[in-house]
Length: 181
Image (spheres, rainbow, N blue to C red):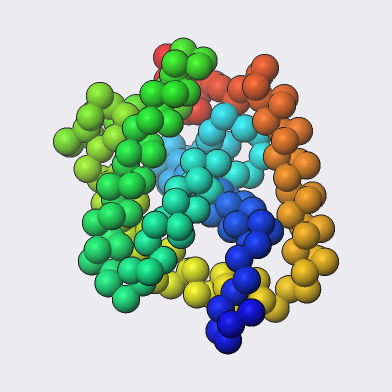
């Protein structure tokens, strides 16, 4: 292992996925708590994670890590990458279940209600925070956790996620405040 570099093994990315998916879940729960004054477990799954944020975080990690010293580029590319991911995820979920989990039709500069300018700006800011601030912190914390504990946490989280995904493949999380349509 090179000095000051993290050996990027499967558990590195799996744990990063779950950290980002959990942060996304917290973000959306807080957003709805502030706007709707209600706790709403957003997303297709029942657990405290939104996989779209985990996938987005991994994409930004893979694509933009080398641009860490260029935050304006990270912002612009994060906004673009995450907006494309959000658009196609919205389309896929609607095609699969006939349900929309989000609808930005009332927002300025939206595209088919699937993405909007405000969302892109938020994703740009979040991606910049991830790439420029959180990834270096994550790498330091990752190094401090013994490998056996990382692998155990990874296996437990994957087991719970697969069980949740299996259940929700038949009974997705829908209802008031969760989906539209």
